[in-house]
Amino acid sequence: MRRFIALSVLLILGGRAGAQELEPRAYSPSPTGTHFVVFGVGESSGGVSTDPALPIQNVSGTIDSLVAGYGQTFGLFGRSASLGLAVPYVDAEVKGDVAEVTRSVTRTGFGDLRLRFTLDCSAVLRSRRANLFDARRLRHSVRAW
Image (cartoon, rainbow, N blue to C red; front, side, top):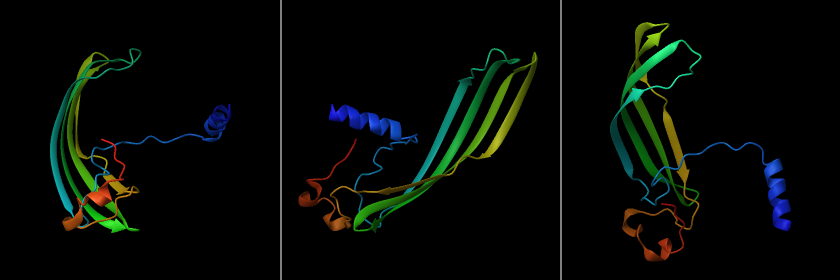
């Protein structure tokens, strides 16, 4: 009964929670001072669903994207932390019938900048390359895969 009351109070007073994204290896222990450089290419194409009440039909699009990123690990408050930045560049072309007239539009430019900060609050203390995989330090760490 206590759990039910506590859960009810938490749900009522909790308010709105923001969404989060879980990135693989975001919290994996890396030696302090490690630098990461990332490049990626992607393509998406296909049909687009629209509201049937709108005078838009037969919509299809192609989106090409390039992304460049950089990250670094460092020590903060005796723990392992990392900071990452990703900048996408996108080229999109969308075609469709608007009021029974075929139209197309092209958009090119930078997408939304992504900045990520992580702080490992588990039992793994910040470490250098030499003692990263010391079994005594990693024995009690918590990880999600």
